[in-house]
Length: 208
Image: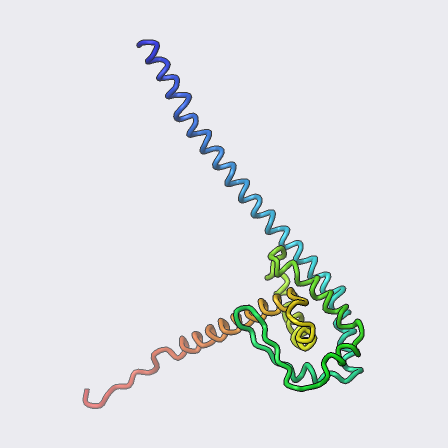
């Protein structure tokens, strides 16, 4: 065996398979790092969602209760009772069927509406931006959030689309989620009824 043969053998042993092994180890470590980062991000999203739920219970609900109290005192319930909405392409369209002086009504509420909606916006931002896990919060306070926002949509209508975008954005997101869940539940109930009915009793035709 010549010196050249020896050098080629050393190159083959140390260069080819070794580099492949190193590359494989590096790729595995990269996948582990990606998986770890993904898990860490999910944990952070869960933790932030839990913190926002605590904020909603401790800060938002008291502010909404004060707003509701003021609305009743001023006898403005007829406004939200006559308010309807539609959601198309993740955008909300608000219609107020009555014709009161809405600007005056909002002015009479003082800073109650501002305080409540500022807190609602602070709550909604992390979910709309994707930083907090929506499902965690939806399962905890989704129903009360949608109810509270829906009865105060007239305030959003007065403020305009440029204000409280996260409030309306999360309302649209969760409303569509609820509609989807309701339809799936109806489908499941229908499937169960169909399964119970089956093909029905066989009727023998006379003469056959």
